[in-house]
Every structure is written in C-alpha cells, then in structure tokens.
Image 1: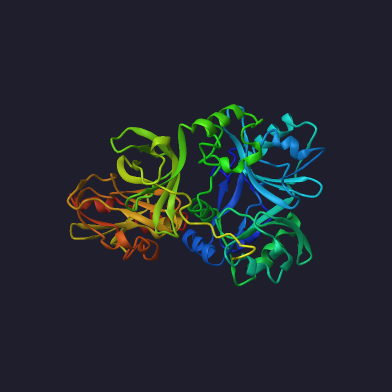
Image 2: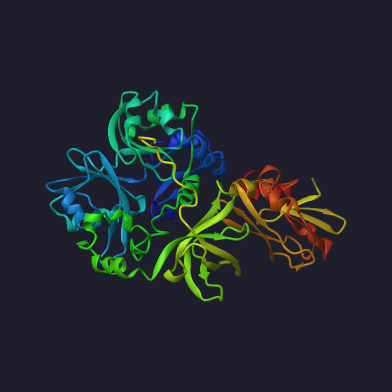
Length: 376
Length: 124
C-alpha cells in the first residue's frame, strides 16, 4: 500500500517510537516517505522467507492512523469511496480506494467500522493529501490523525501462535475483523489484516508503549523483525498494489483490478468523484489492465521498464518488479493494453537496453494463506 | 596486500602476470544486500577502463560493475549464474566476477591501494 518515495527533502526524516530498537537490532535504516525506517535487519531474503514460514514484526508506524467521527460518517465516506461502507458491520475492516475527479486513485486504505467512529489506515506519503481531500469535501466530519500512535504488523503463519500467550483474545478475530485488547496491560487495537499474503495482525498502540509491545512480540521464538525490503517483496508476490507505483492519480480502480472492492450494492450507481469513468470502464472494459508479468531468465525487471508486444510495439509499462524469494525468479507487475492482459499473452520487457521475453501471468504469484475461521 | 587494488566504484582487482581478476568489495556487497543475479560479459569482449562490464542485482536494485582496467575478458566466474549469493558469502574470494587480460599492465598501479580505498569508504 505504501509508496517507495524518497524521504522529505526538507528537514530530517521523522523517527518512529521504535527507532532505537531498530538500531539496537542492527537494522539498516533508509529514508522512506519522510521517515527513517529499517529496510532490513539480517537480510531481505532471510526476512522474507521467515515471514512465509514463521512470523515477522514490521514497524509500520509511519502509516497514517485516522479516526473519523460525526453524524453519518460512513454515508459521508461513501460519497468519496466506491465501496459498500454503510453495510459494514461494527468491528469489520474493509480494503478500499479513494477516487479523484478523473476516476484515478487518491489513496488506498483500510477502513474499519468501530462502535463510535470509523478508523482509517492510510499511506504515509498520502497523509497530507488524504486529509486535505477528505476535510474539504466532508466538512461536517472530524478527521483526527493520531500521530502519537504506533502501528506494528505481525505477519506470517505463526503470527497467531506468537500472540496466543500474550493476547489470546485476538486469535478469535476473523480475517478483516477488528478488536481492542490488552497486550501485557497495554491497550492495543488489533486488525486481522496485512500486506504480505499471510495471516497476521496489525497492532496499534500508543507510541509510548510501542517498545514494550514490540519487545514482547520479538521475545516469542516464532517472531523476528523484518524491514521494508521484505515487506515490498512479500506484497509483490501477493499481488498487492503499492501506491505511487502500481496505482496513482491516473490509474482507475477498474484498470488496477480493484473493482472487487466496490461491493454489489454500489455498482451501477457509483456516486463518487470520477464515477462516470469508472462506470464506463465497468461497462465497456478499461483500455489497459494491471497484470502479473513473468520474465524469462534471472534479470530483475524494475518499475518503469517498457512493455512491448511480440513485434516490438509499446503496449504498457512495468510498475513494480523484484526478485521473488519464494519462487526463486524475478516477477513484475504492470499495465498492458487490455488485448494483451490474458494470462499467457506473450510480451517483451526492456532490461538495460535489451528485450527480455515475458508472459502475462495470473496474480497473485504466491496464493494468500489467510486464517480460516471455520476450516472445512 | 600489495597485489590488491580498488576502484572508487567498489571493485577490487588482483593481478597475476597480465591477468587481472575483478570482483566487488566486501563494503559493496554489504551495501547491496542479498544478491540474486549477476550478469557477466561475453568472454573475448574488449573493454575500456571504466566501461560497464557486469551488472549485479540485489533484491533492492541493480548496480553496474565497471572494468577497472582495459583489456579483453578472459574468463567469467561460472559459479555466479547458479549461486549469485556467493558474492555475499565471499566477495573477495569465490565471489569474483571476471578476469581481464590487461592491455597495459601498468594500469593496475594507478588504482587505489588499501589505505586509499579505506579512506573512501570511511573505514580507515
């Protein structure tokens, strides 16, 4: 969800409450969206693999945690977000996008209906833009950016095991459910969600308590710290979008393959900014679509590379690419003209002036392994 | 080691007769992180000093490797195609990249010595 943007050029990057913990654990820190954050500890490959087989703790305190309150907050948000929010039950979380007047994307976010308000988690690089957008269009609602809060993502198949002695109540949460529980006496918010394709929890707490919460989780044998590098390769394998790379102000949610977030009730009458373009693309199909791209060979295709058809005509662009540690090969995502978007379509992608054969492949590259509440 | 020289681009070079062996430094591999692919030149290619001769890919990014000396590519390390992580494990040994038959062996002496390279990386 978050953009790999350089740190803010003016002033020093901000530090999260876990900064000293990162340094003590040997993290390599990099500027990211105006923050100084760990890109890795022992290494991206090892952290990626550990997340897929056990559990990792990511500091995502840079992300914006925003409380929305006021009368009919969900109805107000529905005027800017094409998703069925009013039907959301209390304690449930939904992934959604905010559209702009051109039908592009202002941001993607996680939205939770709580008993008395609505809780948003938004991209760090988009906090100012989102707050300006929301406040200008929904003046009757209050948007409270809880800058003093920390956010930790505990991700992996053993995330629940790791929490079982600390906060057993959180294990009752279904995927995309939210609850508030104590962890070692610290009040925390738990959302069973994440950005890795694995089971996991996003845990919010006051910044002053973040070190004790993180240390308690890292003391579990299942849990190791992981940085932004593994977070990016994990989300790409899971086919999840990175704002600023795979989605932006020009990409529509239909092109991006995110129309599933709309909800049945709202299709056909999308009264949101840019709704006309979105309805048109839903009816007629978009001109381009986001697809998975599997290049031949081991050269890593990066965002920005041109995509061509077999005869060399430019038909799209790579928006992110990496080496996929779970698969042992490079993978990429990008936009191609719709006629080339079916799995198996033959492409060429540019790599250092050469053209590398590639083909369209279904997303995700690695299937998600979400927690099943009622296995059968 | 008098037989070991460096470039400001973080390549190391050893020389045996007119054959220069080239790799990337311990500092460079540590900065790059996990290396997942190394693109090596064709044997027989003629290269100028400073010309891009290989590409090393980490999970994070691609970086160019430049020929520290002019000459002809005599050999490339066959281990790296299947085990690029060898560069992380042993950057200055088994993780060498290529050998260049030097056009002018005198070029080697123009490269940075250990102290100059250490000063460059702030590890003096």
